[in-house]
Image 1 (tube, rainbow, N blue to C red):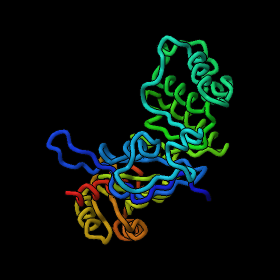
Image 2: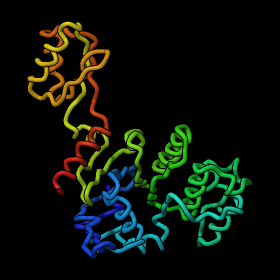
Image 3: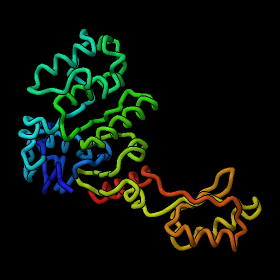
Image 4: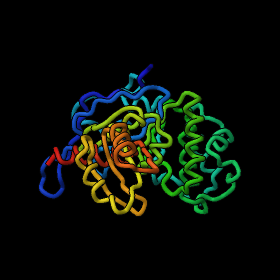
Length: 308
């Protein structure tokens, strides 16, 4: 599988405006992203996501390390039309219509995609005559996507691409992205919607403190939270003693209760299930895989603790 992004020992530091001290925004990233992937870049504020994407797009240069985009420098890849971005804000003239905006930007490309095709792929055909100022936030994001498509790029970088969209609009947007990937494009997106990454990303890269703390297929990253959630019901009079017994079971990390029974986080769901059903007379047993949110909180929290 061919690489479209290759980052090696990437560092980026800034001088603090407060005291002049050095701030390490990106701290030794090594990352390969392959052609045809949909990759989510996740992390808390200050994790280094935006700085990393800015370097990939050639907006800023690394302090040290190397970046290769299709075996070219970021600025060369942009100049060649191999890479385009959909950013959160800016770049739109409010008094123009959607179609006029796309036509204007198309005129700046040597060999652009047709305006009609860009509008169709971004789901804006029916809004072509609407003025930009009358478009919702989600519709303006679709317009930015149409502008990014004009150069027919191989790699799309998306920064919080569905901000301002409702649930239905987000799902329609990602269906469009999946179609673009099937056409051979690669999509890398930063998002604060954990569910969005879980639903649409084939691969998730978690960042904290400028470093990568987890990287792999989204299901695998979710499993790195190392455990599952087990739910079961018990008779009210035995709930306290059962809870104490389960708390002592190997692999149990936490036990809590709600109106329906006990909720247990464990690394040994099979063994715990046998204990609950065979020895503790539990009923209504449910076993849930760890969520991406659990992995996000656990893995990034661990990295934050190490940095202190």
